[in-house]
Amino acid sequence: MNIPSLILAGVVSVTLGVTSADSAVKKRPCYKHTEATKVTKKQCIAAYKRSRQAWPKNPTEAEIKKRVGGYHWAKAARVANCETGGTRGASRYRGNLHWYPNGTYQGPLGMYRRTAAYGKRVTGYYSPDTWQEWVAVAVASHRITRGWSGWGCGGA
Figure 1 (cartoon, rainbow, N blue to C red):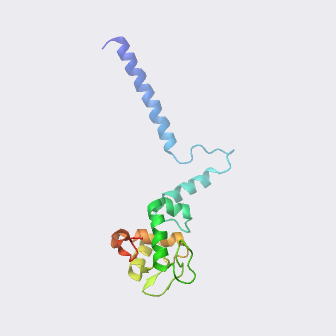
Figure 2 (figure 1 turned 180 degrees about the horizontal axis):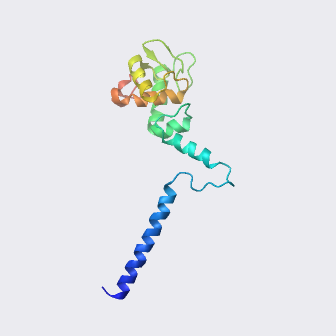
Figure 3 (figure 1 turned 60 degrees about the vertical axis):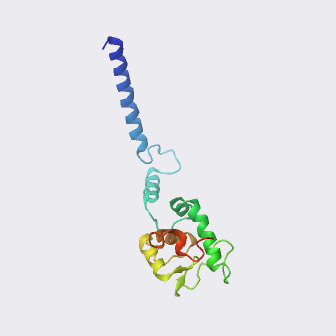
């Protein structure tokens, strides 16, 4: 190797070293937070940890939609409308949230009791009270229902 090649190799290795160090810093959560920001670093780290949980407690719609995806979110609304949409207390896109809570089929998606129990164990939402919790329970139970085919209105 000649001198210019060695110098070029040294420059490349130094450049790569700086780049990998910068990327390591950027991968840490909340590395940009300082005392001047509106969100404290402690709050940012708490939000980061929550975002890494499979099924967080008291989830927002955005959190569950992000976890299940837009397709399953929209599909759940169509299935709920088909399964329980004609019952009293149903909303146009989300079925009846409290449809037969102790019957054979439960919730706005009309889930079979044992299927719902499986999804509740997976997610930890043992008493789903909100639409987003029911969607999470339904999607978590896809392992045993083979997707949406476990519902009578799975083709909705």
